[in-house]
Image (cartoon, rainbow, N blue to C red; front, side):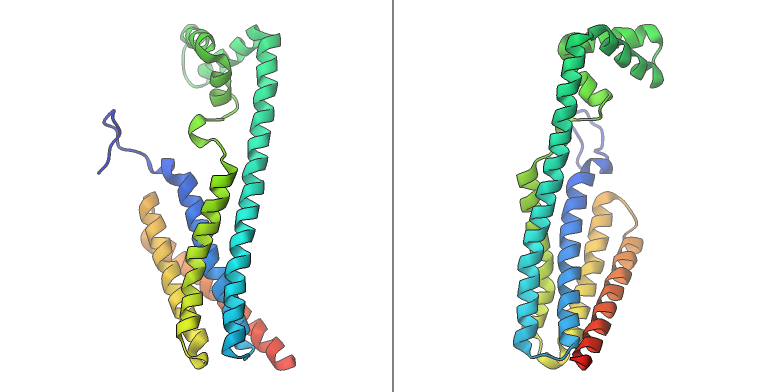
Length: 233
């Protein structure tokens, strides 16, 4: 069991950033691609059309995840930089107000006023902007937004997840594509839910049931739509 250099066991909350992104990407890859394949297969087209839908869903989904994550994280980064510039100017124009703000923050957290003032003074002398960024704005160096990294990670995790239903559709005969894709995807979703819960210290069974339920519902809905439109068309 890993521990930090100080001897303290790392908390699960430290994993929440990368864990959320990885699970979201892989889960979306499995679920959206399998639902697309099942929906198309339910409309009774040929095997080539089913595979085309699967590969198109994988490629489009990966690009969509990458673009969405890049834009989202870039917006977060721009907002944080703007807040830091504003705070920097405020500290330059009125340093006493900044010192009073830090002092009050530490008082609110339980320190006596004299000690809070002393802490605020020392932190301001060391790096006032960093202290305000961390304790007033909630911006930490350990969670600095990295748009490109986030985009690549999301695209990769989506692609890995989407490979499961695509591979099942590729391997299965056309007559059992829906069953093969549904079974492999639901099993993968359950495993992913359990693994993410294990990494986060949560209930594995609850996570597996939750993600499997929603996965089955999504595939059932798209299969119904494919069946209806396939019959109509």
